[in-house]
Image 1 (cartoon, rainbow, N blue to C red):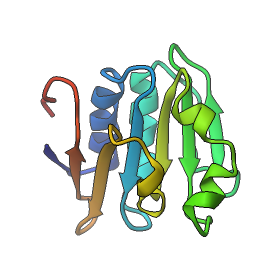
Image 2 (image 1 turned 30 degrees about the vertical axis):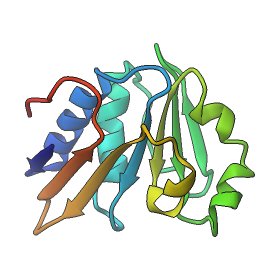
Image 3 (image 1 turned 90 degrees about the vertical axis):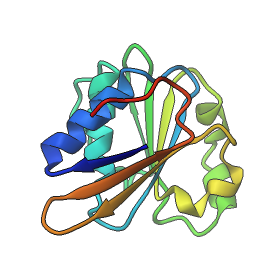
Length: 144
């Protein structure tokens, strides 16, 4: 599934439509360059999960937890050197837990993520335009 966003607001709205459909145990593997929109789409996903907190990138904290109807575990593995570093954070109980996991820079740890992980690739284009590709989406088709 491919979605074209013209603005951060559209990216958030698309994320919101994703978030409304997510279920316990879903893992979202976000991929894209710096400033591609990974945290922006996460803001929308959190809204779709009923989370009102201000979502920020967990670049330095590595994992942020947000309570909601389903807890959101927002992870950033940019600063990690290996999948083992990721596992050493104790993420397995979160990935296979009661919430939804979003992993930014997931390219670095794909080999240890569940095969059911939903892959979301964000590509920055000119200005605020983004192409968002969703792979392995297990739910009904989304209408942007």
